[in-house]
Image 1 (cartoon, rainbow, N blue to C red):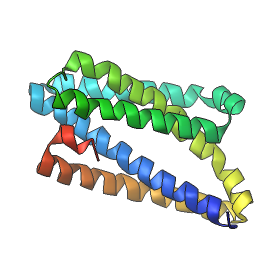
Image 2: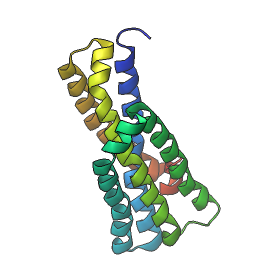
Image 3: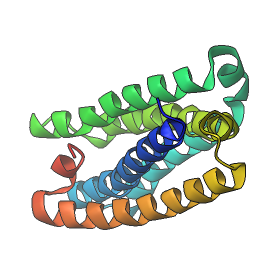
Image 4: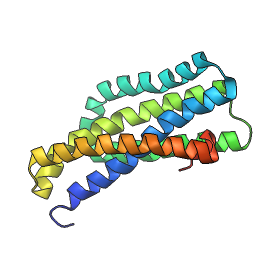
Length: 171
């Protein structure tokens, strides 16, 4: 891989990962709200993802140190894609209910926390490997986070409007 290759690979991976995360963060509560008309269940669903996310991200450091940041990021992101894929699959077959959804979103939070922490932990190594100043890598990573968050949210709204919240998660 050429000198800037690791930096570009991290940037592309973060853009895709964060865009998808923002999409699901909007689509899943919207799915609950449209199915149940309950703001309480909608909030509970969002909390069931964010609470384990925060805890897993905060406590994931020792696991990242032991297993390796790259391995954790890849494994958790791949597992997260599979878990998110359960939502439209269950919805397609008419099996999706709030009691079925809550453990799924809990698992999403548990997987995303260490993955995000691992990607952040890789930034100094990526900067050194790519021979790019750390300030540039962190600046671009911050810009990617904000851009992907904005694009993911906008994409979520457009997809939900076009194909519905359950099927928007396929994207």
